[in-house]
Amino acid sequence: MKPADTMEKLVSLCKRRGFVFPSSEIYGGLKSCWDYGPLGVELKRNVKDAWWNALVRGRSDVVGLDTSILMHPKVWETSGHVSGFNDPLVDCKKCKARFRADTLDTQVCPEKPSKRPGECDGELTEPRQFNLMFKTNMGPVESQESAVYLRPETAQGIFVNFKNVLETSRVKPPFGIAQQGKSFRNEIVTENFIFRSREFEQMEMEFFVPPAEADTWYEYWCKERLQWFLDLGVDPDRMRLREHESNELAHYSKACADLEYQFPFGWKELEGVANRTDFDLKRHQEATGRDLRFFDDQTKERYWPYVIEPALGVDRAILVFLVDGYDEEALEDGDSRTVLHLHPKLAPIKAGIFPLVKKDGLPDIAHKLEEDLRKQFNVFYDQSGAIGRRYRRQDEIGTPFCITVDHDSKENGTVTIRDRDTMAQERVAIDAVAAFLRGKIGY
Ligand code: GAP
Image (cartoon, protein in one colour):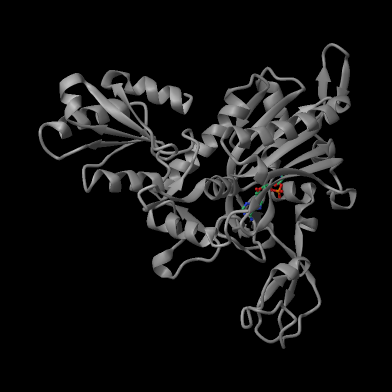
């Protein structure tokens, strides 16, 4: 387990170096919403690209989609969210704080943080169901008829477009439709930085399969999704797949497993993989009268495919990569360094480029290299301060390579490239640097 104070240090680093800021900070912040800064937005983009490349572009059996956040309100009645997307809520009669009734053992009284809610002097109300969807109005008139919801998951946008995709793309089961985008949940309790917030991003894929193949594909996607994290360098000892007990399963789900990560605040769900059966397509067909079955040309059979769904939160994945990569290392010379061991594919900046000194023509060579590399990679030029300090600044934000232009570069056209993790340096010809980086990053 990472040390307990890792989260505090990470939140501070994220703020200090421009990964994540509290939303609307100059107005005192809006609890539970977060803004991604210049480095955070690069990291986020890289995480989303890694997912999109693995699940969509890298496969011939998955296509992409980007649906609207506001959908017909009946979608959410049909999906069961209007009636059933609730958490039990209790209030403290004394301090008026609100808690999720089913997780009281992990929450604390805001007035007496050493006590659990209800174990202080305050009495709790009876639990009542609280719907997690954000409601707004479409158009100028505020009425029940104009009410719409901010989507609480991206999945329904995929189900309601199932027929559109079938009719316009040359796909047939087994095949998937993937989507990335914002989702909103009016969570009663938000916690642990970007782990649980009210506005977040999801990456979901609905994989439509012949019912007889559902169990095999479920196993397949559980393995694939775990492997995706391991391939991006996450410590296998801090990841596990937890199969749901039958009493944990949603009513539409035949099987479900959580990919869990051991955060400094305990083992928590990172991603869910579910066998949603044919529940969603059937329900949307019943509600709309549109035939959402697939017609198999060969067997002449018409059927509702079963759906295997890997559903991941982008922000939660980012938190895993940050927590897992964060380290404080003692160095041989008695110094220490903070380092983010991010996979090179995910690192916001791929290489720092430093002239050893600000004179003797070294900045010109370094600038020229920067210009060349920038066409392919996000690189950062830095000539200020001692070279050791420049290395440390890049280590702390996870930059995998630092390239130094020194006096030998003028003589023989080579530079040194320092590896963030081993701190070993090697000399590489300037015109071979781009290929070197491509090879290491895995482009
Ligand atoms: N379509 C299925 C679905 O939405 P979920 O388990 O409710 O399933 C999927 O959500 C993933 O979305 C979670 O595993 C988590 O990574 C992320 N997620 C859910 N609620 C979140 C929140 N309030 N803040 C951040 N991420 C969240």
